[in-house]
Image 1 (cartoon, rainbow, N blue to C red):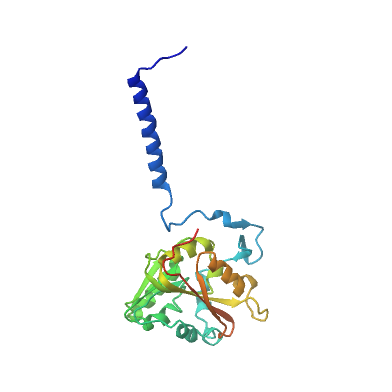
Image 2 (cartoon, rainbow, N blue to C red):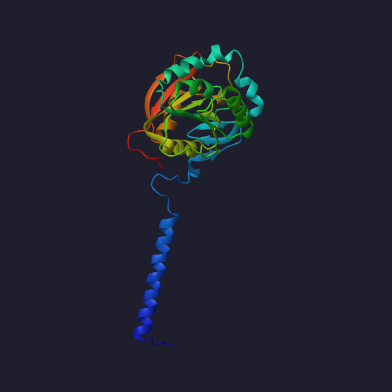
Length: 260
C-alpha cells in the first residue's frame, strides 16, 4: 500500500535524518584519536611459542624478554656493576644541563636516578617503574638521602605517565628489551619529550657473543635503531665506550608528534 506524506511530514523526516547524521559525525569526532593521541598498535605484534627467556610476543622480528622482577633488586645494586657498566661514564656522556628534566624509565632501585639527581640541581628526575616494590625502595632512599628533585612515577606497561612536552632527556638502561608494549611505551615517551628532547638507550651488545648475558636481554644496534625510528625518533649517535653495552642516542625532531 502506498503511503502519501504531506510536505510537512517529509520535511520533518528529512530534518530527523540530518540530525542523526550530524549526531553520528559528532560522536565519531569525539571518539576519534586527537592529534598525537596513541592509537591501537596491536597489529604490530605477532605471537609464537615462548622461548626459555621470552614471552612469545614478537615486535619487529624481536621476541620480547621476560621481566626481571623486584626480587632481582640486589642484582641491580651488585658491587661489580660499577666496573662492568660504568654508570659514571653513562651519566657523564648524557651531557645534562643543571636545569634539565630527566626521565629514568625502568628505574628499578634508582641506581641511575640517584646518580642523575645531583647533575640537575635546578631540574628534576622522574623515576618511572611499574613495580610498586621498586618504587617503595626508591621512596625510602629518597627520604634517607634528603633528595628533593626526584619524583616517583608508577607507569603502566603501555604508558610511563609523564607530562606532555616536559622531558629534556630520557634514559633506559637494560630495560627497553623487557617492555611488553614497546610501540605504545615509546609513542607515549615521544609525547612526553620536548622538541629536540633526547633518548639515551643502554643495552647489552647482541653483536658480541662473549658477553655473559641471556640472548633476549641483549639488543643489536640495528634492531634498536629500527624500533626507535618506527616511532619517529632520529638516530644521533652510537657510542661503544662502555665495556659491554651500546650507548645509543636518539632525538625527537622539532615539531614532531607521536607517530602512528
